[in-house]
Amino acid sequence: MLYPSLFDSFFAPSRVIVVSEERLQQAEQEARRNQLAVLDNRIEELTKYRTSLSATIKKMEPAKVGADLDALDGASDV
Image: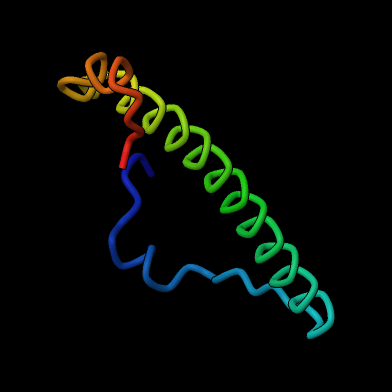
């Protein structure tokens, strides 16, 4: 038979996997641990990016107008 019929695909035997409650809980716990590790890594990456972006912004900010004159007058940044 070159082409299986659509009818046969509906009545093909299905596959059933039996898993104990304990193994299911272990698998769920492992999946949650993996999700937590992924989130921790992403938070670390984002924190590093935020720090570098903040430093870049501070470097790009223009200096205070008249700051050199304040230094001559002995004034402080208030």
